[in-house]
Length: 112
Length: 117
Image (tube, rainbow over all chains, first blue to last red; front, side, top):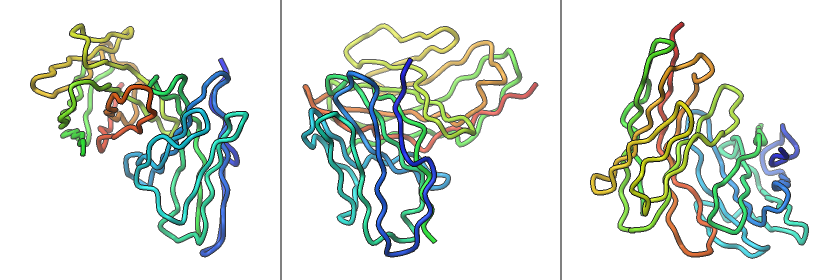
């Protein structure tokens, strides 16, 4: 079965740079979620989109923005990167909003 | 805000034995969902089991079952016949029910499960 695709899988950036993470949901899934997992921590919810509209918002910094496109893929844009942004970023998808969330493999972001 | 508590940072069990991981949560909602996710060393988040709060029957998926006590706000995971491949970090997660909305998950801190051969 097709799974959630995230790209890139690994990303290295310098402080104050910008990063863009991409997420391609499971086919026919219309809802996308973003999570941030720091080293040794549990995942923290950032933001979600349902049918291309922002649905729920968690602890997403103002330096981060996201959107969902007409083909349902989503991008997380991160600006003015800080050392503390180094983490594993997960995208998850579900169908019809409140259904079970299935996670992608994650993007490991390292900020130097 | 909802909180999820996993009081066991680490558990160890012999292969083929049974282990129970604990999870409690705090919410004022009456409708919600509870999940257990597994995160092996690959860091992939894998769904283990899901429970709807309105269902009194405990969810079961092969060797995995839950004990859902709504009044006590408790949601434990039992793994029977433990296998080496079960070794992972296990996260309990809560999600409120908001109609058609796409609410995020609130996770506990996780329990690291070690399987001894």
